[in-house]
Length: 104
Image 1 (cartoon, rainbow, N blue to C red):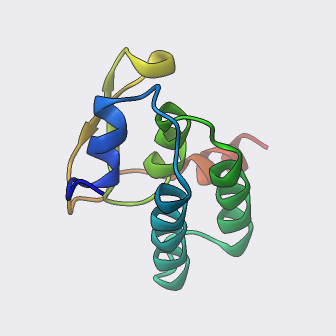
Image 2: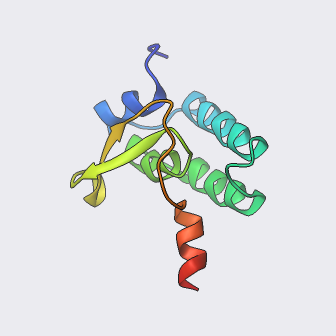
């Protein structure tokens, strides 16, 4: 690992393959978010499944965006959203899962 946050590594190289070490790092972030009550057990398993299926860094973006304090959207780019870093600050508003529940 380069010492950079995982978001920065994969934003710099979105087409790079995701390593098992990257997956383990993000899995730990998911566990921390669940333990802190930031995501539900259902959200945890959905994100975990997406994580282990992610072939490239670009596929990690929606997973990391679902975690408070990791990524925020700032406009068009990777798959329609440019992702910026805002370390230590949780995104305002409901998570993607809460928004889905509101629509149903």
